[in-house]
Image (cartoon, rainbow, N blue to C red; front, side, top):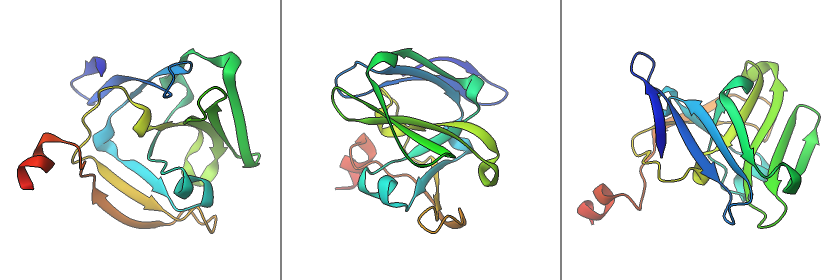
Length: 149
């Protein structure tokens, strides 16, 4: 779901939440500028699909008290709901990714249609952050996918 947009940049405000709704957030971004999938163990096993935004473009609306943290190192913190366990967002400061950021789990957005959005696949498993591939996202749940079947 979007609430506001900037026609010149394509930036929109998206709302999202965990499965139980205890953690809710808003983030401003243009998904057509690119999203990421990482092959590190945690991203791979949780099917993380994210977009990075600057800290000022992310707002935690509810759930600070139930948030839990997982991090392999100081540079990145994966935040998840302590009630339902969903990994909602992360934050960190990785120079190779442009410095301080928030990473939003696009699978947690409420009502967003993201078919066709570019996905950059990154090598976080080996901490190189090298781009392995780029491909458009195709939702198996979108109306267009059902028309092809």
